Length: 294
DNA sequence: CACTTGACCTGTCCGC
DNA sequence: TGCGGACAGGTCAAGT
Image (tube, rainbow, N blue to C red):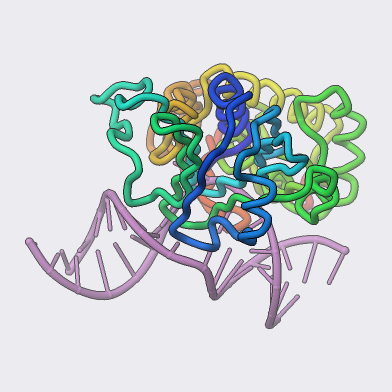
């Protein structure tokens, strides 16, 4: 679940909470979640302080003064929740928040002080926390192939179009999900962006007019920005750095709204499968292009 | 090369 | 109530 807006929200939260603090202990219960050598942990994690926190695509980067960086991918169900008091930080008990940590899904615990800990929770164990020399972070495979940041200045319409040209025969949805084309879009915001641009997710890139591509480009940026404002989407697992839910899904137009009415034309929203992923569309607003036509 | 499928895991929900 | 199966935000590797 955590896509760009969720990871950005966690980044902003953690920046306020742990920058300048020193890590004095780390524990983990699942080696794949924390695949680091004891020597690296001793030498470059323990007794290191957090310099700053960054994000690239869906990946979070916690830079330490040891010149190492904690590179973190939350994958589907990962959380980074900070607890700085006996009481759990913020949130609303009635809102299905996490009430006590560590819990069953806790994989890694970073201790700053007795009452100051950061929990990496991950129910499905797909996520990970890797300790990598800061100078090498940019050259790990994950980043070498990663596409541009969709909210950065360098992500121009021209650049977007150019990337699309390489994927002419693919469905536009699979292209949006491809992190080497654009970094940070996942299933939720792909569906929302395609709806806003009135494009059917199964459309081949070659079928999209220049005008449509421009609409999509603008839609991606608009959707991601509004999702960041809403502090991301919480369907089930996602929480911000203080354990709070994101509110974007309350205003989502199609995602997880199958059977409800399209807010634009009031036709019923349906759910299909595209590129192996559950996909939500309005069949009326997002007409499927027909082969041989137009 | 492009696209699909299965794998990695756990939990939840739905139908029987 | 219990059980089996499908499904869930993301990426890889392997197969077609």
